Length: 400
DNA sequence: AACATGCGCAACCGCCTGCTT
DNA sequence: CAAGCAGGCGGTTGCGCATGT
Image (cartoon, rainbow, N blue to C red; front, side, top):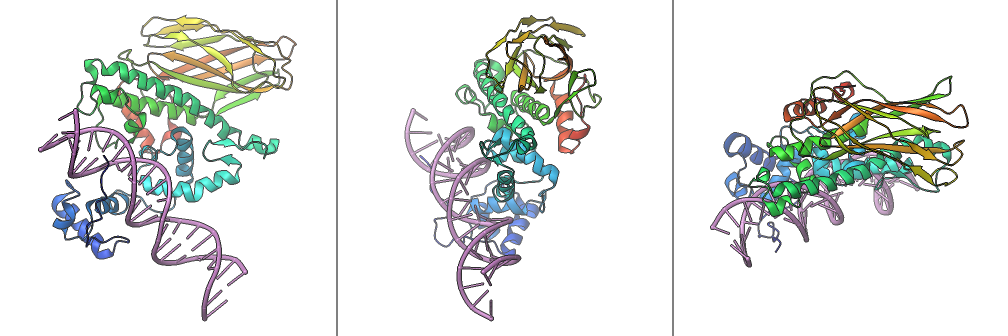
C-alpha cells in the first residue's frame, strides 16, 4: 500500500533548517504541547514543514538528551562490536550508545569506522579479515575481530531460536499483548525488541529477550587469552573478570538459549574433561566440541559429546564429561574450539583449561568456573544500568 | 585566487509495520 | 477485512566546508 510522501504538498519548505525554525519547533514541543501528533504539529507551531521533517529534526538534532561531537574510543569499539553482531540495525545499535542517535551512528560508521576497518584489512560488512591480502602478522592483529565475527553465527542461532520461542509463546496466553498478537509475535524480529527505546517499557517477555541479548553482548565483549606455562600447560581464561555484583535467580524455564564459550589457542586438548557447575537452574542438553577453523593438515576429527542433565537446587553440581578426539598431529595446528551449553536460561561461560601437550598423547582438562544465565528482570535491569553507565569494564558475573 | 576534489553530516526518500477507522 | 494514517527505519542524496592543485 505504501504511503505517499508527506512533503509533496505545495508550500512546504525542504532542506536545511534555519535557527528560527528550530526555535519554533523547540518552543512548541518543550514549552507547549509536546509532539503527540507530528502531522498536526507544523501548522500549530507555525512551521512550513511537513510533520515528518519536524520529527526528524527533533529526534536527530533538537532533542535535549542528545550528545553531539566526537565519538570516544569506547563508543567506537561499541559500534564496531555491535555492528558485527547486529549489522546495519542502527536503531538497535543506538540503544546501546546513550544519547547518540541512529542517524549519527550510521553517518559515523559510513564515514569513519567503515574506512578504518577497511584500512585494517577487515571487511566492514562481514567483520572478517579480507582473504589473501594479509600477512600472518596482520592476521594476528585482526584475529580478535575475526573471533568476534564468529559470534555472529552464534547470534543468528540464538535469534532464530528466539523466533521459534516466540512462535511457541504466541500460542499461549503469555503473549497476550496488543503489540504482539499471535501472527505478529510469531515473526517477532529481535531487532524490534532491540530497537525499542528504553524509555518505553517493554512487554515483559520482550524484556527478557532483550536482556538475554545483552547477555550475549556481554559475553561476546570478553576477551579470551591463552597462555602456556613453563610446564607445558595451556591456561585459557576470560580476561577482566570481576566479582559478582548481584545474585541471580532463575524463575522459569521458558527460554532455551545457548551460550558459547570459545577457546582459542594452539594445541588445545584432545581428551578433555568438562566440569560444569551451576546453581538454581535445571540444565538439559548436549554439549559439543567443535573445531571452527580447519586444522592445519585437514584431518578429520572425531568429536563426541555426552548428554547432560541436572536437577534444580540452590546449589547444583553439574558434572559433565566431553571427550574430544582427533587423529591429526597437533604440532603446529592452530584452531578454535567451541564449547556450547544449552539451558533453559541463557548462560555465559567462564572456563579454565589446562592442557598437557608435553607428550605424544596430549590430555587436558577444561573446567568451567562459573556461568551466568538469564535471571529475573530486576537483576538484568541492574546489569543494563551498569552498561549504560559505561561501567562494563567493572562488571562481572555472579559466579565468577 | 580560482577551481577541483573529498569529506562530513543533516536531511530526504521510500518502504515497512502497526494502529485506527 | 481493507484502506488510510502515523511513525520508524535504513539507504541515499546533496549541501557546505576544508583541503589540494
